[in-house]
Length: 250
Image (tube, rainbow, N blue to C red; front, side, top):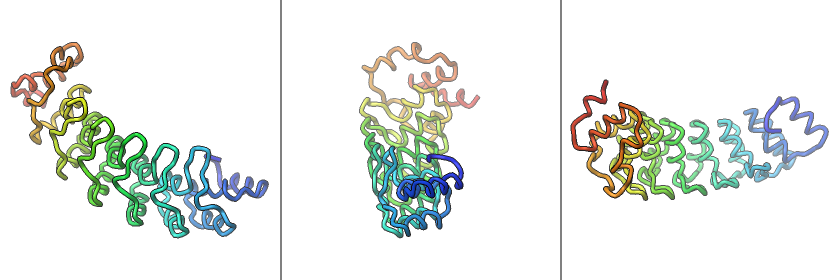
């Protein structure tokens, strides 16, 4: 029932009359009238599948904007969480379902809701390099410097992923470029550690503090043990207070 044709869904319904199961998976097809059809037969708006996802979660997964609007009009809770603590907006951010995210936010979805991993929707969007959703969330009040359970902000996550575009968006909206996580690392530390060169260049160009580091951390005491690439060795020159940024451009 997770995938397959509309015909198979209708055959299954004809044979089993399992309204709720068919209803939950109906958003896959992005046919609002189909979802409304099952609701007209008394489908439970809060019905969940074996993964704890309801119809609105699946609509977000498939970016079924119109179906999401139907579900909300029938009383679907936009902030309902699945077994992983993710609501429909978390899922929309993960899958880059921007249109559905807009619908959810317009109907009161909490842009700062935290899932069981301690991540907000903004963290998830940064992880997936979803610049459009990052912009959308920030424009609707997402806390740009919110830290997850590891103390990482969206900027830390974007730096880890070497997502220059996301880094630029976050900084342009006021992200604290020198925020430290629970291990005392800034976004620049994380970008350097992961050889995320585009993110390193973006962070340095926006004034990231190259002197902020924990002296007791083994990584910075013995950096050559961790960086096999020549380009990352150039980053180490920066940490030694040498203006090597020009070298990074080549």
